[in-house]
Image (cartoon, rainbow over all chains, first blue to last red; front, side):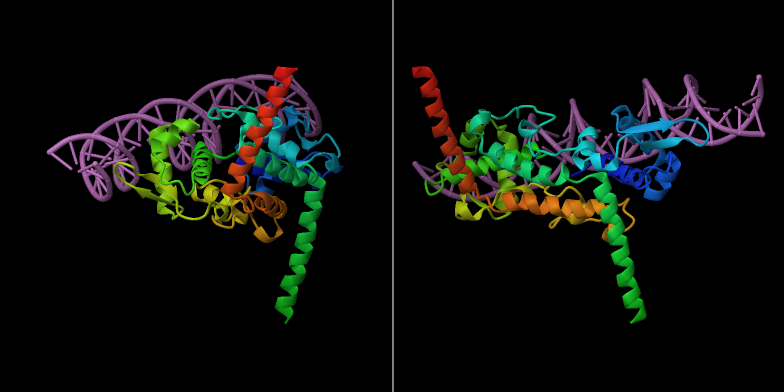
Length: 155
Length: 155
DNA sequence: TATTATCTCTACTGAATTAGTAGAGTTAGT
DNA sequence: ACTAACTCTACTAATTCAGTAGAGATAATA
């Protein structure tokens, strides 16, 4: 499962992707728009900034904004930064490799083989979807959803 | 990430799959073979029994054995029983559905759409691999590994 | 230059989960 | 009766998660 921290990061980055090119955005704006506790979000955005994904401006008219184009920031990048789990077991993690303590022999571990396949299938989605994709997908869903609501209202 | 409990369950079930048809197996045997703390393993096997995957016999000559054929027990069955996470977010979990508290509208949530794709890709592996498959895969790996070791030794 | 807006940083706390352990109880075989 | 095994409930320590507190730094602006 993704932690709340990771989900908050994904949501915040999606908002910033949608805002890309329109100047900085306040923590408090993002926090309200996405139902994220403000103090918690502060920490998260700071981490994303220290990792080089965001930049910030202080003082009036300040806020956060993307440092790179939103189509170059992949969901897997964000999940990894937040320490989120992509692999099922640490011994197949690309970025946080650790041997499984209880495992006698990694090379002949069947679970590991399966975990490798799951990891690759998962990355096939997460490393190929950008926050721009996510923002657009959401916009489409909102449009679709409105249409459906109108239909059932006008029936 | 899979919990240790889930990994232990998978390993224990693989051992029992390999032993299928050869009578009951002692907790302590499994525990030693797989480096699993015995007391912990007791709890795990009991749960698997209560869930209907295993049966047990008490007293001398007793132990645990599979109740169903090992090719009908899928990895996803075991992971779910152990409360393990298959979905990235609760709102796309097939067996443990819960809305994400912070989510305003499930139907238009982009993360949810992505999580659905990841879930399906993950299940494509876990729900189609049985503990028999796992045991066989491991046996193959052991044979391969031996060959490689021999080669490099005889060189 | 004083004030205000905004991000920055460290550290703390409470709740939940995880990974086990303890120990008495039950049942089956000999 | 005795012993070998599983059964069951409950406890504990360590870790992680989610969130909060509060002082500090910096930029804009009046």
